[in-house]
Image (cartoon, rainbow, N blue to C red):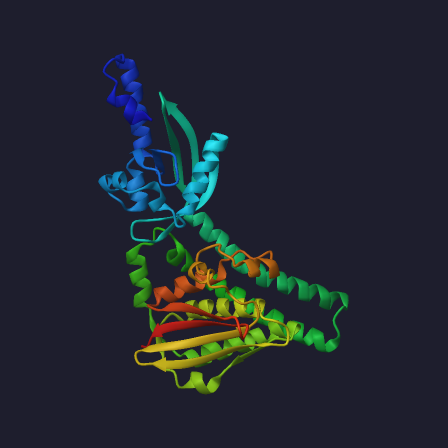
Length: 365
């Protein structure tokens, strides 16, 4: 890389030195992380430009001390990439989920190649921040599902495939799905701030200043009613227990974002429930915390799935079998929203009962 050539540049002619300095200036000013590191599952940084610190939040001294694998969301992906680069000599535009020093996610588009200097081998590469692109992709994914459902129902009604009673159910489903799409559009300006790898704290604080009391009972009951129309086609009921929800105190937050998070959880429960079963939503107060439980009977999560369940793109093996077209984004988005509200989502799986419970915990207002 440029830096090493400059360090041993005493023997170069002045025109060559000027070219190298110009090249170094270009590399140093790039809004992308340029680096050289050693191969292997861990790897160590040898050289890097200033944007590497900007992108990942480490000081130059810290970057020299950590392993390259420390920047990966899943450390095993560093070993996989290293093997791939060594095998092919180069990889281009590899999308990887990485993480900053503070633990926040950042998506990188990585291009790297093997270079040799004497007996030593290195990886020279560049990482572009692809987080905004992935945020757009995420939002697109969230819209495609309900739009496909609307299109399918509309086509069946137009072609006369549905009976009159079924057509009325389809109309209710179309109304519910269109309301979900409208909610997504209203949240378009907010989601990138919550899901991005470089969230501006000032913007997030501005969002928090808009927090107000949110009554959970009417919010959750309306979500259940909307999903009744969608789930009836698979003979799955969605029921919100008004008795346990009505006594819950309000939480502080943004109604639209919480609706989005809860809707994603219900959508996930309906998607992986067995036919002729039900999705139940009930509440429980626990001191200063409010707990909302979403229960369904169907595809059971394995213990090894639980730690990875909210990782972007992760899908349990059973889920991939039942819904091959899924992308593993819904629960990731739901948890990001709940975390922003000072809470968390805790999954529970019971193999014996084939029951899965997602417990949303939020601070009361």
